[in-house]
Length: 215
Ligand SMILES: O=C(O)c1ccccc1NCC(=O)[C@H](O)[C@H](O)COP(=O)(O)O
Image (tube, rainbow, N blue to C red):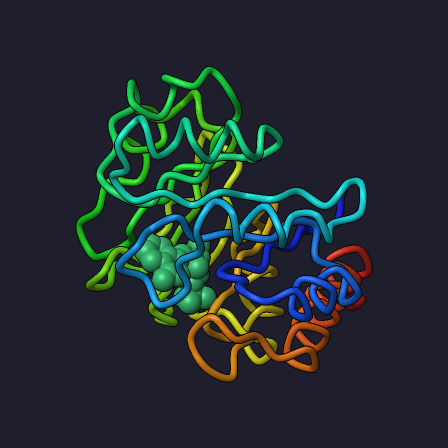
């Protein structure tokens, strides 16, 4: 089985980008949503992305953005993987004809199977907790709400930290995990130790899955 990929979202500082890469992140998320305390401009995002070595993916997060906003981000940063975190339709997400992640806001009664079918063109469905303000709320959703299988790769997010990510990876078996609040000292300001502990915990989860305890 392949390792669980790691995305660290909501970076705003060069030092945090360097520390995320050093910790072992596979992707960093840049929030292009002005109301967020983690929002960055396209120019700022370009400065941060310049720090990335090859094979670490920058992800651009949008919430109900207009086409011009996404066009501007892609013009400056054509390597962005898109993440749609609002109320975007499948047609809107597919408009750029490029890989994208689609966030599902998990709550009781939410039909994830229907959602995954509607967004079958997504590279993965990102499972986040339903919060006011669309995301990045540091809230864990009830993982038992998940159906036994989902017809798309899933990224687990919502209130993850080094303390709960091993459990989350073992229970949900996502292709990747995504964290923001759980590795912060304040919104938008990451902590190098927390990022390292988080990545180490994901590696530990992978080891435990690969070598289950003998019965
Ligand atoms: O980070 C934000 O402020 C934000 C605003 C609006 C939509 C999404 C947002 N963030 C999403 C993420 O950071 C992650 O994809 C995910 O939700 C994990 O967040 P957290 O629960 O804080 O770990």
